[in-house]
Amino acid sequence: MLKMQKLIQIIILFKEYFVLVLLVIVSLILLGSNDNTQVKAIRSYTVAFVGIFQDAISIVPNVFELKRDNEILRQLSVNLSDEVNRLREARLENIRLRAMLNMKERSEFKLVACDIVGKNLHLLRNTITINAGESDGVKIDMPIISETGLVGKVIATSNHHSVCQLLLNKDFRASAKIQRSRIDGIISWSGGETVQLKNVTKTQDVKEGDIVTTSEYSGIFPPNIKIGFVSKIVEVQGNLFKDICVTPGVDFPSLEQVFVIITAIDAERIELEQKILHPKK
Amino acid sequence: MMRHIKYLIFVYILIIIQTQVFQLLSINGITPDILTIWIVYVALTHGQLYATIWGFVAGLMFDLVMGNFIGLSALTKTVAGFTAGYFYEENKAPATLGSYRFLLLVLLVSIIHNTIYSIAFTRGSDLSVWEAFFNVGMATTFYTSALTLIPMFAFARKYTR
Image 1 (cartoon, rainbow over the protein chains, first blue to last red):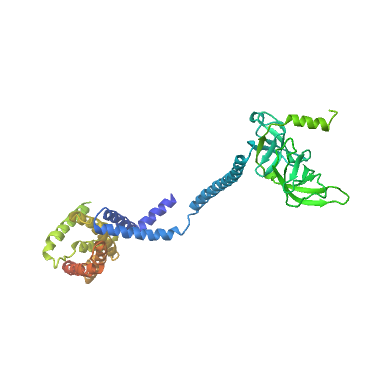
Image 2 (image 1 turned 180 degrees about the horizontal axis):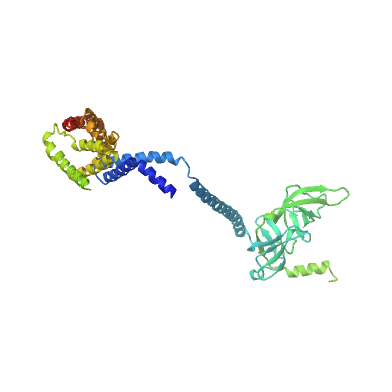
């Protein structure tokens, strides 16, 4: 109320100025209603003049607008970051799938592509669970490979899932050979990031960097599947055999997709071998 | 109220004189501005507020009668009334009206009036502001000032009796 009275007092005190401003505004509005060249020119000057002021004023930021802009930009940043992550993921998946597709096309075997849905890489008995099972034709002892080499073999199946024993498993064994010199051995694992090629005598020709593949002697794994490369050779005094470390071609921690090789297990051969090796059974 | 109606009628008569009679007095198309003289008179006798409002009313009526550039005379005469109102002194109007101060005030107000008018009127045309101001604005100012001599002497005669 007091403020209102003050305002009225101010208006009364400066009434001449208020009236002048009001009448000038009315005159300008009336001028603006004309459509002759003079008024058009005045309008353009007015726009230019107001534009100069707007330019000058626009330098001063509006705090509320800035806050709102900031929130919008932050939201946008989160969305874009999410988008970038998804695109990056898609790109990597694309690279993997292309490599797998390429391998599938090259392979002479019937392959079933599947995703790894469970991993256990921390114990001595490392296994993975894949989303392909008996309904896909997967059976126990079928080999598992990836585009970079041998992964392991199937040890248990259900309708839609299978558990696979990895190369890095204490119970895993596979017949292997040095690709260059055709020297045979047995692949096994006893911890660490490498597997061992056993039963290779000190006189046999093995060099660091040699590629190790599956051999023809395995009843489970088809021959010539890459296992890895020889990364270390140690000759222990008093020992007949070399200690050969083989670095697997497969990067197990980052493994996401694999193939099951659908092979017909040579049951007759396995039965005969078992009979000779274990005559009492 | 009656005074206002009288003023309205008076303004209308002045506009008729301005547009019809003063055409007979024109020199190279230049005519004196009787409305400006009247607005200065109102400012000296009734004050700034009155002069501002009547400047607007007279200017608007003139614009409406002329039917061209509506609002321009309203604007210039509003400013003229406001400027002239600064020289209002209570009870001193007769002395001012009858002296050369009236003439000088009309001259000053007319210069301001014609400056604004020239600036606005020459926008968008090939005519320069200076050309318009000196050839038309100043000529009108001096012609108006010269015409002010008549009421000035009339007032001097009236108030010195």
